[in-house]
Image (tube, rainbow over all chains, first blue to last red; front, side, top):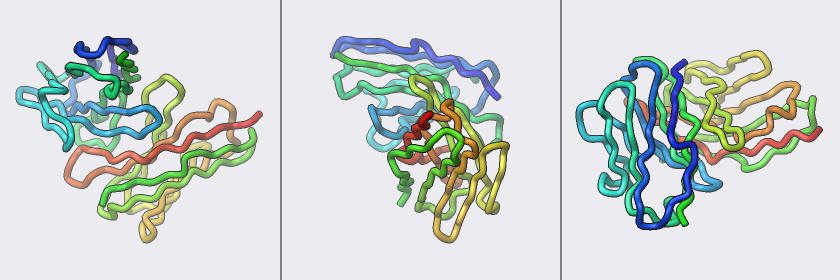
Length: 115
Length: 111
């Protein structure tokens, strides 16, 4: 299975600031995803991070608020911009297990609190 | 629709069996999954089942799939205190790598 490292694991940020979350995988993967888990809620897909092109965002999420980078096949970043308390969530990076494999693996998540 | 529903809470005694249920609405999903989330941690893949299977067993875990009723269950035999966590079912969205997650069931194991 892929080993996924996310940084930071948690942070407390002031409203109006931005935070960039990093996701590093120990092997090359085609598909990388970013999810949000609001307090007491399930996971919601934010976007698919595409290597070499712009990320594909799900309904309700926009690039200006959640810019994503994917410079290579092992790394991606998600930025939460101009944060408000409503952005307090766990943000999780996910990758496919192997090309064509049905399962996905998740990082340990970044717990963000906006005050 | 693409809603995946689970009951919110389940409490069992240590050594008993736990059964966590899930209903989904997209009958064309190819795979269905169970993930475990312990406090402060990410999601750990427990098991998954291909949609043409009725049952899959993996050590203490048994997954049952009733495709006609769009019902998925996870049975944990001999439940231990370390099994206390939130369990999410998820279905794959056909033709994509996306998942739709259920609401999660918080399992509490009483010693």
